[in-house]
Length: 358
Ligand SMILES: Cc1cc2nc3c(=O)[nH]c(=O)nc-3n(C[C@H](O)[C@H](O)[C@H](O)COP(=O)(O)O)c2cc1C
Image 1 (tube, helix red, strand yellow):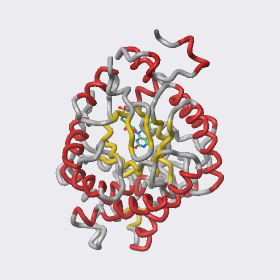
Image 2: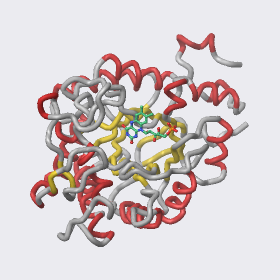
Image 3: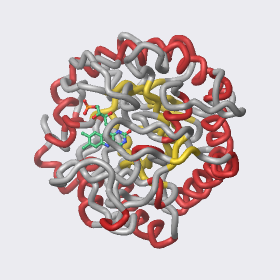
Image 4: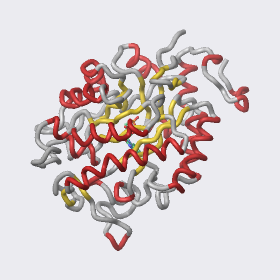
């Protein structure tokens, strides 16, 4: 049987062996932004599991851009060396390595999910003051300082410097994080952006920082390597960012060297979200149809048949798995078997060959 999920995809000069990729997932386990053995095992085992690309978690471009003090970073050379060990292992397992570059804006400096305390981390517990387009707090968090124009204009330079380090660290793909209520999403959404300068107001103005960031990253990231952007395609509330707006921005970004957009939703405000299997796929389909860009779909895509169907149906070009991959690092290997993909079409590590389904 031929399978869409297990057919290769080429973006620029980079070919992915298949179209089931690991979604970026914070592990909240770093010290000083350095990935460690936990990150190594987490990412390398998914590469062995057959994901065509493993995307490392939201990795801060500057220390104050971390969601939690335990986030990974790419703001210094020690972090480059620590990531290099991991990308080498991912490559040795036959996969490709991506990293999501991020600045958490008004949602920075928070306690990690399993901490007994929640909300903003105070300075005396290792936290720092947060910044955002406007002095509007995310519910339950401290009020951020509105960024000066100089601070805004520093953001693209910080992303570009991190992209250069991502290249030195051996990553094949970078993804700019413009979703889930973090800094670039905060600029895009009228719910968090009340600026009256050239970075607020019209959609063009709200998207300006993202476009400038993409330009800066593309300017340093090698021409043969793909650049992805993750969006929250809707805020799920009246007056928030809409699928039509995100489609328009994605269409524009196609002309700025973006190769694929990764379509998530929500995270900028509290909202009632109709969560269910494939609940974000309609947004992915709409952005794909309207922007002309390849698209990744994500969100409760858990069975091989469902994943395959989304691609056959042309709602998306790639599927990303998050929580299902936490439960089952070898999900792609099982999926290939269930979809009847011949074992020869899915590279098995020779060490594990005797465990291959035949
Ligand atoms: C533990 C955990 C950490 C996450 N961290 C990130 C992150 O760093 N960046 C991001 O864009 N999304 C993050 N997400 C969201 C996932 O990438 C994914 O979009 C979401 O879990 C929905 O997909 P799923 O239903 O397959 O899990 C995280 C999700 C989980 C469960």
